[in-house]
Image: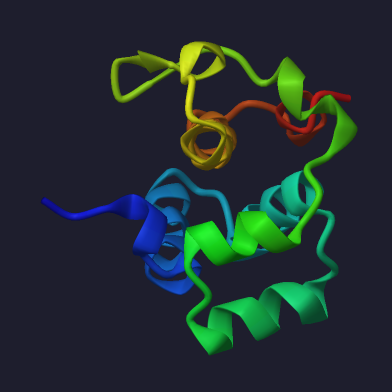
Length: 113
């Protein structure tokens, strides 16, 4: 069984971008939600994408946005706020933000503005 924790951000980022582009959104918007959640700037995000940083290493290094705990709802049949393992909850937060983006939610709402 594949473990998402050891998957590179870059491989999933490409899937996120493909998902939102099918719905008329952009890579820039995906990058914006990743930066918002992780506190990275664009150069830092690009470094992690190029380096093949795993989700485990990424979330070990960054500090989540203070409003991240306001990310709630269901992704892949799982309520993100009920995910007990901290790393998996952080990954699900990112999944949820991208999901909301793909569903056409306004960026201000996606970023819990």
